[in-house]
Length: 142
Image (tube, rainbow, N blue to C red; front, side, top):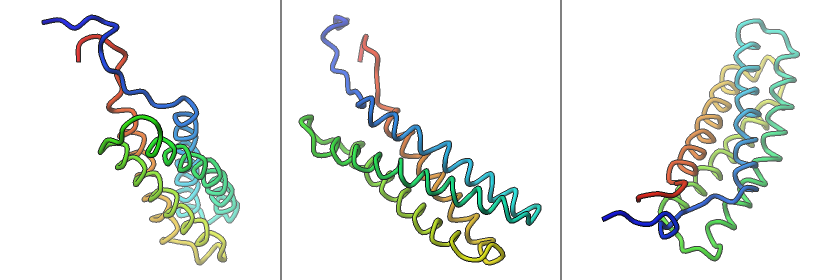
């Protein structure tokens, strides 16, 4: 039996939440690419780029964590995917913070741990985005 278009329950992600989550990924990915460039060339400026990109990712990531917290305890009922999404965003932010602290050291002392920490933070942010956007539907049959 077909369900009318207007009767399908649709779970939506708040646009502000989607913007903050989507903004963390290019910043963490840019930091990862800068770390890879530093690992290959040992030009210290790449480490500086990675530090600044991590700082930007942490600022936007903190806003994404707050938005995920509001989504977790908002008016809509909690679901397992919302809890997993919040945990992944929080874990990405914490690993990103540890990576930023590691990048604050001398440039020669940041490798290879800084590269691995940034890789883990980027992977966690991508996983959080995957979980957040995987259950969304535009309507139609469930």
